[in-house]
Amino acid sequence: MGKWMDGYLAKLAKVRQENLDCGGPERIEHQHQLGKLTARERIERLADPGTFEEMGSVVREFRMGLDGEAKPSPADGVVMGLAKINGRPAMVYCLDFTVMSGSIGDQGVWKIAELVQMAGQERMPIIGMFDSAGSRISFKDGYVGLNGMGRLVRNYCLYSGVIPRITLVLGPCTGPLAQVPVLSDFLIINQNTGFLWLGGKIESDDAGSAEFHMEKSGQCDLIAESDEDAIDKLKALLAYIPQNCWEKPGQIATGDDPERREEKLLDVMPEDPKFTYDIHEIIDLIVDNGEFFELKEDFAPNMVVGFARFDGMVAGIAASNPDELSGIMEPDSSDKYDRFIMFLDAFNIPLVTMSDTPAFPPGDKWERLGVIRHGAKNLHGYSHLTNPKITLVLRRSYGGSNIVLGCSKMGPDFIYGWPTVEFAPTGPESIVQAVFHKELTKAKQEGNYDEVYNFFLSILKEHFSVMTMAKTFTTYYTVHEVIDPRETRTRIVKALRASFNKFEKIPEKKRFIKPA
Image 1 (cartoon, rainbow, N blue to C red):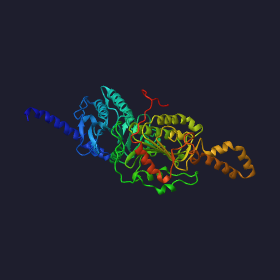
Image 2 (tube, rainbow, N blue to C red):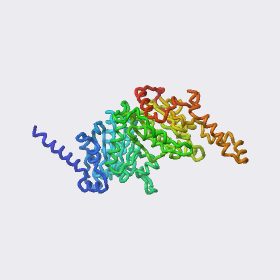
Image 3 (tube, rainbow, N blue to C red):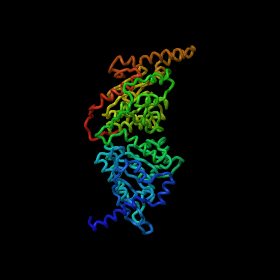
Image 4 (cartoon, rainbow, N blue to C red):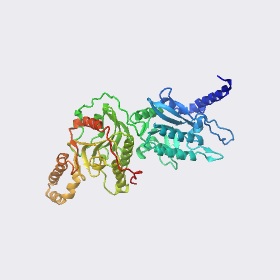
């Protein structure tokens, strides 16, 4: 080897050693004391052994510090590159809190922006891990990263629906940078160290925390107990998602019999419709090995969303939960449902909808919260879905829920209903009160109110029963088949197989315009 190369190699070796040293031993120790891994430790845990190929390692902060001295800035505080995660290629980056508190500089933000574009062009997921004090301030130039921030945000938006974008907030993430995790498809926050905040006054003890963004803002999909747990959850999530919008999620052998009949399903639903049940009981009984990967668990729990497998095939489940607010479709649950089904459609993941809900809540309170426009987003969104769609109606399908949850002629591929299903424009109880108010008033005076009320209610419930309505196949609310609850898993498996190669095309357009 030529001696002339020695000097160059020495410089390269020095750069690589500086990068491995991060912000120095004191900063690394401080990071560990905070209960956090360093950026390189996080990537090492995420990537398959020996697969991480770093990019942008020579980049440094080229401006002087406030004291006129150059600040140590290995990789400009952004460790990034190509890796494999459980054998799948992905682009990954992590902000390094040991370098100037992870503040994002002019070159670091451009590194990430370019990496996102590379991920989009190479058709692979982009994984980001945030631990940053926010925007880096230069004494001479002020905030220097706005130009790169614009490109970063634009790239994240342009590749929406093209590649999966998953973000972990493992430390602080504030200011303009806080927009990026929310632009991602899925956000995981460390409940002990994560903090996400755009700016302004903090007025509550839990502001910016994982719980805050899960329960109140609905921006967090998964809460982790540690950096390690967050990375493990990311790997589990990625297993349900394809590489890009041109592929389908992978199938695996789960060992669960696709023909399994589940006797326990007969005991989940209470005989009296006034009583509720938890939809998780049904989900756990029909999916492979009872494994359901739920998202946004504590946000609008009246709508349950998440991933599961049926005979190894991935599907997204969206289910109204009678055990929470009777499963109503209020604005938060509508938003939760809308975002989830949009992701499924973008990445060719089948949708299994499970419906037992009195639909949208009436009244001044809900109208002020925009229940109509939020519901309209669901109608608009479902109308544009081209992925496989299987609907299971369990008990109540009242009002607008019939079309919002794919129980009617909105384009579902298969609609199955248990024999307990009731289709009605609104709850039969309300109809009895409205239609037979004179008879009920008289009965109240004569002391036989309950007898008269139950008489009319039984007539209506019989009229609205799927066993009555299914006699006409298309004219009224209906299903493709009324099934024995014990057949539920088998029916879904066969429907997923049948729709695996489906082709559905919507009218050509430049883009659709969602209701406000």
